[in-house]
Image 1 (cartoon, rainbow, N blue to C red):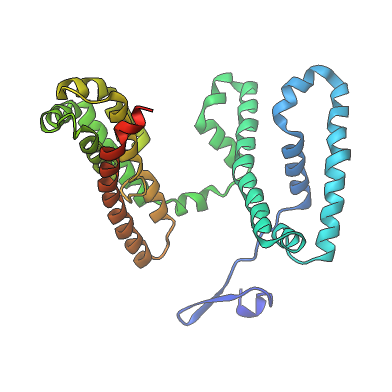
Image 2: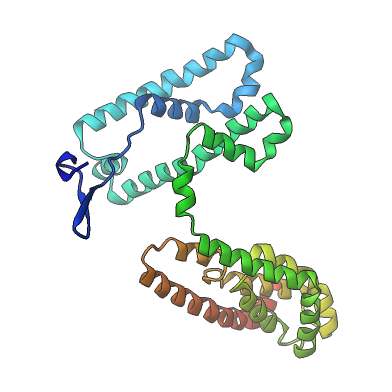
Length: 309
């Protein structure tokens, strides 16, 4: 395809001295959109329950179609024919720009989370035709979504941030290996010898914060350290168990944006520009390490007071 074949409203990207056409936007068909809207409003989740009513359940599908889908389609057609733009522009012109942003964000959130969930429900329901055990299989659900063509798995796999995934999985594996080999017990005993009842909250918050900078808070730090609270308090010879548990939660959670942990790694993975990605990595790492100190100070000062409430 030459540059002359590209429509006027489509830009042409240049690579060196060669030109290539930007792929045309793929639009969803009106039939697919209608089926998605109907399934989201009527909800397939209630289908097994409504099936016991037989043909009478057809009436229950006609009611939302008449009182909701039809008026909504008429309103949408009127807005689309009279004003340019979409939901954001309509609400922004009619109410305000902040409300327009809220409206389009709600639409985005519903689309992102609801339709994959709906596809998962369809896959689980379909599993009962072949093998009910497949209903709880993530592999089966992914296979059904791929087969029905609901996703471009090739593009998704190529765009996955494999470096961030491998880094987080590797750090989690190392920390889990230390835990399984008894390293955390040795570390807790050493911590008990260094800490005093008056400084236990701050030290445990600092330690869990530092560890959480390169591991998962919910999957590694909390399950590892929270069960050790009673024994740690006993070894130190004093302290408030609830205050120690609060210190572990606060110290570990404040550093969650560290680029070596799950949340921070996902943030870095979304940046396509290498220079910007490295800069964000450095800033998040500095932030995570500094928050471990801030969390230690806060817990030392206020954890016991909050635990006593």
